[in-house]
Image 1 (cartoon, helix red, strand yellow):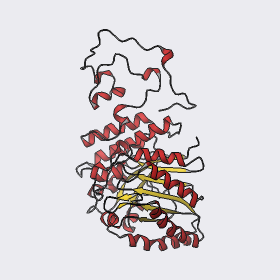
Image 2 (cartoon, one colour):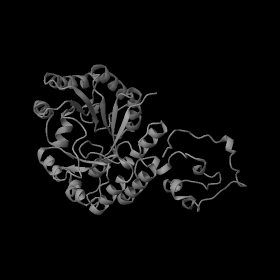
Image 3 (cartoon, rainbow, N blue to C red):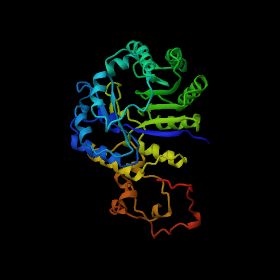
Image 4 (cartoon, one colour):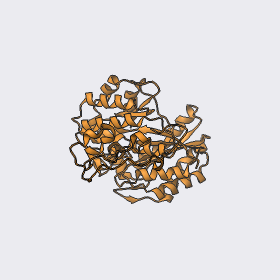
Length: 377
């Protein structure tokens, strides 16, 4: 099967930290950002330049950007919702870089959510489209993009249909077409976790048919109802080698918006789970999964609790005979004990081995491993 090119955008330091305790110190945030920088991830959101009144967890964003250690080849970005925020972010370029996307028109399908989240209305978002398109034309932009927030539904207003999505995208597209600027990018955000795999597949297929010139698709999917990872897989079924799929994920699967009604339960697809799935589908990510898991464990230490991700607790598939579990591994019961895949059997030495005699090693011929041109992490 032909898959799209994947770009992972690590959102843990923004999407994740914005819903966590304001007591998490700057030193810990610097440690976490530095750890993520060493994983091979090429795109990392460091936080948001927003009002501390709305998001107090981002009050030290300027100090964080000054203190962390940038790694060459990594694109560090930050969210800014207004001109004041954009001006603050510009003061830190470099190490920050600009948006990965072309000029974009954007609207949320839920007026209630955008009022709660950004203190603006849906109509205000629509009214800005003309300025965006005119500004892009004035600046000589060669391409533009379409964007929808609350694309599949809202906790406040309910389900949104494919017709709803197409209607709002058509209105945006008409402005770009009138300006003579081709649309090449589509961004779909799901802040309230209404994505479902079949609807994501249906939506992307319809978008490809209506706008065949779009080659970059950006998905920001939340996971309160457990559908983010299945929906990412659904996107992989629709797109192919002609396309780039940009995926927002968070290490540990943390994240959430205090204005959507689900709090920390919102979450996102865990970066380590996405990397594990992609690599075992034969889609390279160039991410060091072991280092990424180390970063998740550091995150859990900082948070003082476990995170929703799976691979960071249960471990990836054993990818070589040396990594297979011993047939005489003691009983494993807790999440902490399951981390023996990196910590070794010392994690479970206190547990029993109730079988009457040692279990022999399996016959080598019975062990089959995935083979690939490049080793899986």
